[in-house]
Length: 382
Image 1 (cartoon, rainbow, N blue to C red):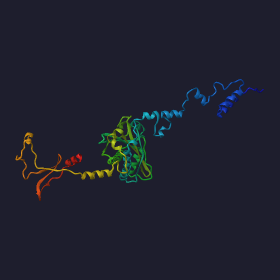
Image 2 (cartoon, helix red, strand yellow):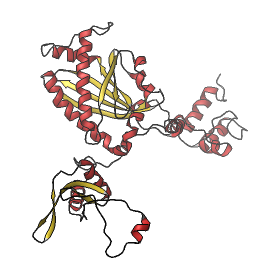
Image 3 (cartoon, rainbow, N blue to C red):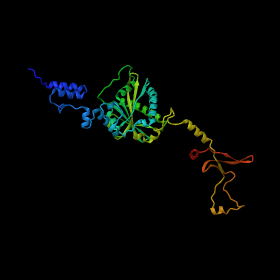
Image 4 (tube, rainbow, N blue to C red):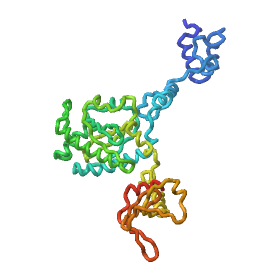
């Protein structure tokens, strides 16, 4: 015998259909219709968003929480940080604030393309994958092993840098330099240390790259990169504190069907002495310099008027005697007719010469070149 009272399943289905339709009042009417004498939905029924906002503060969803904190599941794919994560990493200075740095590395890519072609006698293509800022400790933990790490010293900057050569590039270089045939995959033997031959060949490759790096920095300043040591364990290649910021340059080297990656890491402490040079704006191939202004300045300097004095002799006398000089007094000099006269510009001694006469004018014949120190002092005074 069927009962007129609806079952619990029917009530749940009716309430779900009303809520999914977006009409809260219809849901309330459904409850009133199904349950005689009821004034609304039960106490444990879901509330609408408007009712929740009216009764208490709205609860943030997971996306809003991730946006606020700066954490997300795909943060590794995105280089930008926001929220608290941006404050944590505020010590990292973006390389984009150093405009000349990217110019230097683009020049490094062009130089490496030529030098590695001569080094391997093969068709080599070098490409710049990325330039990014990161902490030194994070980079050491991200190095894929096995790899060879070359620690080098920047002499003029009085600090160190790190060059990492991955396993694929190591075996490719060994294969190319020892006459491996093209079209074959470089043979890899995992789980063993690198042999002496492999280390020597990679050392030669590192020296070629460091020489190109020196040439790339030449338009800005002279920096000599000298190889310090070769390591295979990242723990022994610690050249900075783990929390220190550094610039990481990722390079891709392709030799037709072979190749690999190498990464150049420079701590910000290494670049600090030339930071002002790296802040210059890049204009064409001028590397931050205005050649027009330099030419104009040089022209004006060479045409600037200069007052010269020919000094036959100098001697010291008491001030009282000089104040009492009268007409007819004689001053005796130590100079003779064969003595050399000095050519002076202000207080700067330029050169010496012989005093003579041309027509009705006194002349001086220069008998020694102007010294480099005198030229430098003249330019500094100008």
